[in-house]
Length: 416
Length: 181
Image (cartoon, rainbow over all chains, first blue to last red; front, side):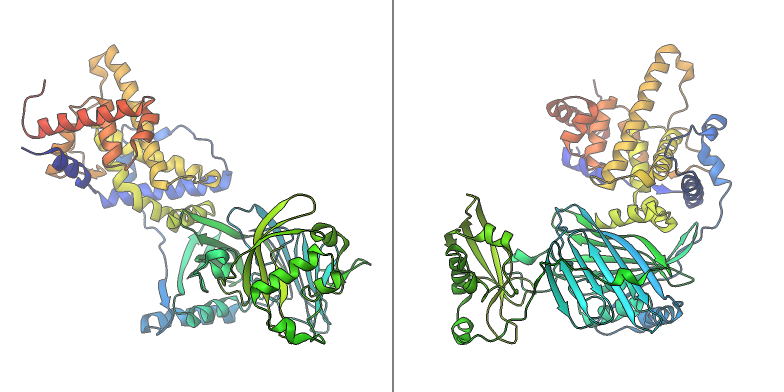
């Protein structure tokens, strides 16, 4: 007598085998469908003619087996010690990197789950996609000019300096910086001749990174596809920073290159969360060697611009240096509460306090300041706070503070 | 799950490799379910093929909200039920119009290759009322929740659970060689 559990197992484990010849024939028919639907881009289902003609069209497919173009290479390269088998994959990639043709200008359009005016690198699983645009050009004198833009921020390297404008009127000026600075981790995609090399280097450098490479045969040609898996970096005893930046997330990057020209055709990043995998970044368009006017690499700043200033030592610098993170948060909010903007500026590394910010923070009431904590890769501390703004709004968040500046004193870096 | 999302993303871009991987990953399970539900090999094979064709045709618009396995299982179940209904209607018209059943397994180019155990199980399954068979197969082989099956069967979870239990009991009786009433 078989108990019910055994019957259940019998159903569960019942397996079938399939005819390999028919498997192949059906797959070929699916490839044909794929080609057709890509040509027509129509998803309307058409009645099957074969169904009318034949009782079982499987029989017909079986008679028309063809050989399928298959994957050419599929190799996994692990970081630490590159096994011999993977060395050839590395060689393929190195050769591919050398093969990239001459690109003097590039324009990339992408979209990213971020906030329009927040850090260039900031991501959020729950955020909507925000457009990102990037331009790069080698000018007549051989200088690389570049620009990265999202709705609330513009970053431009005009050959003499790098300026970031946070709309409407906050700006940061630095010496000429390389592409990828100011947390624009995706901007190095514009260095098309370095991408493959960099992917390879990144994989070798980190023990938990994994790289998989294969060729994909598409109707419009073959693509070299690189997929990298990276684990979140940093300390997540407190997971405040988890999945707020790419490096602080478990993620997969997928690069697609034209197999012949080795030029980048597509790029996507998926963040692995507990619930699902979220697409957070996607290149939507790449234009190689477009005409770009030099004016795109200059930035007109508003008359009332407020500049970021590197903190300089104060007369009583020691007092501010020796504060604990909690004391910094208390002192900062106390200055807001008392509308003591001179004191405020000792923690706020800007040339002036914006009128809007004064209106927002001035006269606030401190409800509580919590215990500071560290999270992810952030070099400073996060201090939990709860305040009541003059508007009556209660705000509960984490203040980000850091002291890795030449004056070694604490400044507020974000979280307002 | 990530693999499926990536595969769909690649499929939308026309990747043959992705299509090949999806097909190989789910083909056998879908065929097994269709064969169990329909008890007619050629119809089961056609349904699975139809599901893959429809999936490929709609790939560019396809948005995966749940699991790909769940989606494909539902597609197979829906088509199998529609076919079963149309067969029931045919049966009321003329018994002669019914297509050959699973006993007709000797065609040279059949897709599914049965072993003895599977044949016995399918033969037992064939004796269950369709709703009971559907509840048993979709829950055990399709890994669907009773809530999902109930929604598909347009009935309550309680009814689906009863169908599942009755189905299993009846199957046990048949497999044990007992005479069922």
